[in-house]
Amino acid sequence: MTLMHEAAHPAVLYPSPATCYQKERRHQRFQLRLPVHLSFAANGLVRQLEGVSRNVSTSSLLFRANEPIPVHTHVALTITVECAETCRHIQLRGEGEVVRIQQARKEAGFLMAVACSRPITEMTARAID
Image (tube, rainbow, N blue to C red; front, side, top):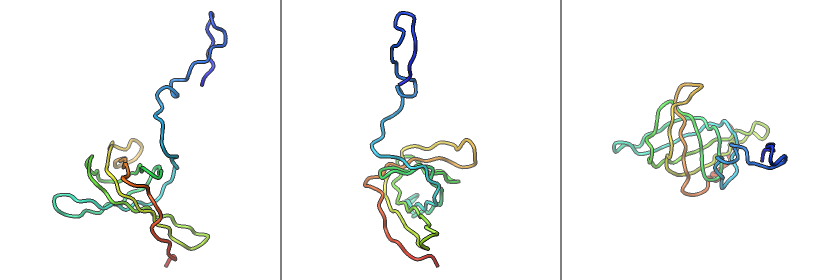
């Protein structure tokens, strides 16, 4: 909430514009830049695409990739977290549908949002080779 003053009401609270229009999120989002591997069907073939996450929650993913994936495409995704201190890779798996795509503004490629059909969860933990 932002405090705004008016002559008739010297201390009336009004929500800030950002508060009025901010979409409520079901799950906390984490600003993470991690490698993302996606696979999806296109023209009868299974395609593979690499990208980098921008933010991740248990139910969604925003990532950047060099090629676009059409909206409504079902994707399987793997996010790899490298833990240098423990020499382990943690792989997070999820499945969902591409719900939004836009041209990246500050860099080449596309930003795409995936709504997951079930929560993103840890798949395996393995030692780094």
